[in-house]
Image (cartoon, rainbow, N blue to C red; front, side, top):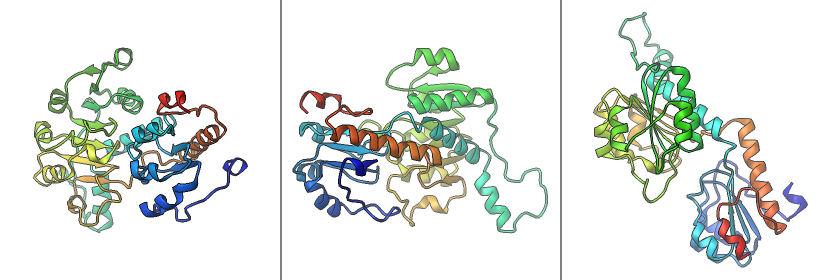
Length: 310
């Protein structure tokens, strides 16, 4: 699709992101950049370009892009919202069930040849049905996770920057402050965007508010959780378990204390990782780019204010 409108320069290694200095060099004379969340599109890189007009991120989040710097130079920033909502909500639920019922730990236990007999106390987990699910960030994905909770007869509480009254009526969700959510919830699932305000939103103090039987799920952005504090809380059994798809540093360093813990499920950032969803994300990013290159309004434009200056 892109070749019909532009000459392309492609990074050839799908599993390794291009180094920043390569991006810095390549961006100088291009009109558009289709990037991933692993690509740091900061003010320095944006300023190095002579004619950049469109930055199209293959992700709903865009914390890897300095939107203010792009807007200041009349560069359109685009993302891929909505398409990954249900797939990511499914993944969050996979983590809820896997961490709560110790599925990964049980799989390792069996494969290691440790299963000798049925036992009444073997690998006991936490019940999901009838439990209280707390959702931090009640946007599209948080709401989709909440809707699934109805099928498990769960009580639903949430916190956000504003109330979602219509969704409360639909789901029975209750709006509460973060400390109350942490104290009441059996499962806490994070779905807020990463901002200066949400960085380390869940730290040592917040973890002490949680029940010792509680499970923490993060499929949003890694830096929302203080990883060192979480590892300590898991090690000391101050919370029951965690399920993580995202990390403060990605890929997860091999010396991470999380890797030595049994009571945490670790996934390699596959929240939107279904064939249909990833294909649609790529197509949306390309549609954004083509529209921008043609001088049209991209379908999924982040910085609307740039239209007045383009």
